[in-house]
Length: 242
Image (cartoon, rainbow, N blue to C red; front, side, top):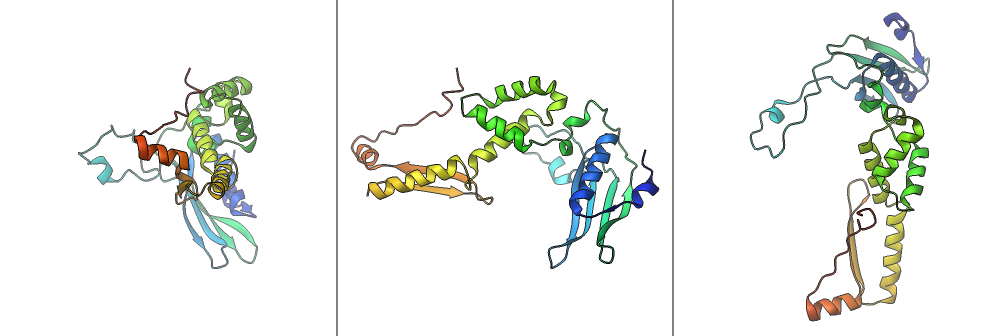
């Protein structure tokens, strides 16, 4: 029911509230959004922020003209849509005011039953994460957890995320070094190194400070390898592979 004039009259006390409004507007209208450019002051205050339709711009030509592809190209989703929403921080009012708003799209909008599957309207909540972790601790696979949540919420469109989102959330939680299993593993290996002079371990982290690679060998393993050259590999999927 909002008109363009109504949107331009709106004011927000934070950038997050402006984002929440535009995402809610997009959900009602039937499209997905993504963040675009922003301007930040020295005090780390966002003074200008721009959001666009997720189908804004077009895929770069270098990706369309590649001849050495190993996989088939993904479906083209960006069609140069011009829909935008911009806000600017007003120092006197101490609020964000709307500076640009274009509501026209050059592509069909999604039907209501398809909107929950659009990217900006999907998220795994902290409650869902906690429930997933509890079920994984008793040996339930991620795919089975997704099936249970689909029944629990009453359909795929009511869950709030798709199977891939849940898998990504599980992987992120598993690799996080600050809390959880990864920190416990490193603490255990550090204690073992104090008791065993020949114990060796080494790990790497990625740019997000998440566990990337881990290797360890105790004194018995090193002596056995020197004598026999055998390597023992653990298949950690045995509990989920019937």
